[in-house]
Image (tube, rainbow, N blue to C red):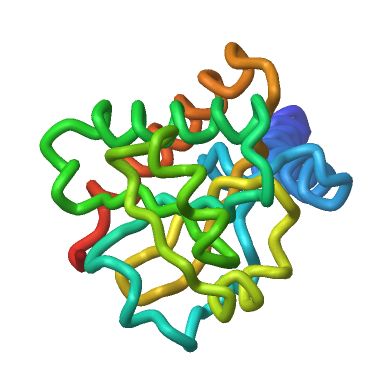
Length: 181
């Protein structure tokens, strides 16, 4: 009889060893205690596909920003971080172009002194397509003209630099895994 009890005990232990991890995984996933993904920005599901006037955009990947009417400290910090990300991306700097989008020619002239190394484009149609994004965000456009990630901007320079590190981390990952652009 004792060998029968030992066999039952062994079967129960094996059964519990397999069932407990499954129940734990189900509980964690059903309660949303686990967030999948390693991106630091906010992922757009589905991505915004730009279809009008994309011929104005440079080839490859772009780090974009829709310029406000007046460039305040948040805007200045964003332009600074966009330039720093472009420099920090290193050998992939040829694959990435920082782009500032403007509503009109008048707004563009104010930005030329603030961001001489950033591509400036007057594209009201593209800005209209980006209306789904929150205001004052930096976003990533892939070579197929899909906006897939965006990041908030900050008036505090230190916070904006930290956000720039997040942008840089995601861009490095995207450029490493990408076979296009």
